[in-house]
Image (cartoon, rainbow, N blue to C red; front, side, top):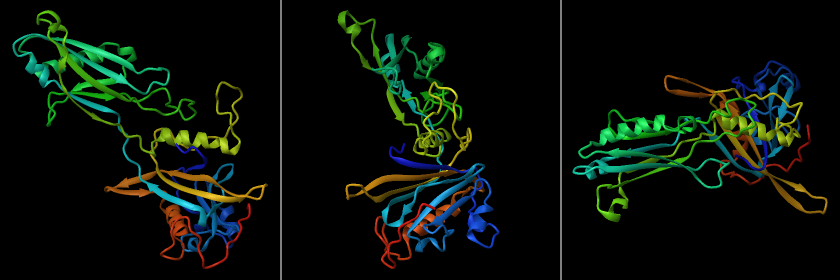
Length: 356
């Protein structure tokens, strides 16, 4: 999550630019903007499209809402550091695959005791890591698939009220008959106005076996019981809960600090993010320079994040951010092919943006 000055614009699926509106003047086109349209203006308040953007020294990006236009801060071309466009990727959860072949080999001629321990790392209320352990007694001659079945039954029934993973046996493929553990998604933040930030169940697994029939202390020795593979879950930037958190946190830069943290009444703007939606994103990072009262020049890190939906037809990804992306690409590159991020165009003098 962005940790410095941030403007977040969440589109509603309209995606078009106000420059395409009917109107004789730029002000008329802006006035005719409908909810969900993007508006890009230069330092003189003139509308900017992909053709005009290379020559603009500074712009502002706005999103038309039912209560007016939500503007970004002024973005100076010379101070842009990076521009990133990200298509949505499918969200996944942590997954662990456990192969009990070693435990089955150890149980060829004698019974063994197999323990699987899951360690959870994502609980903010636990100073130390939280663990859940599952134990299965394996008789001599038991196959690996039967051990997997026993653990599936144990994990899905034991501690069911506080369960954090779902267990299953892989039916077919290279991992057939192996144990598959998939983290459950968080369900305490499933509302747009949630005060619980998005999170994921993060866990690891380890397994060992003992041989109770061995003599003396040998019955307590721990031996390797399984081969374990871990796949980390993906939390894409366009997941609706992360977009929701970004939109809510950015309200603080507008002076909106009361977002429901145990106070009443809650007075804040409505959220544009939609429950369950998926978003493409644009992230524009810049460091505008300013003149301090003690006659120094300093820079402040700022970011503009724009999220909007997309459509997929015939495996073609069509983003509602395409029009805005074209304008920002042209603005950042400038009218010289060699212009790099963080440099100032030399074809005209610097123009100090107004606050329009």
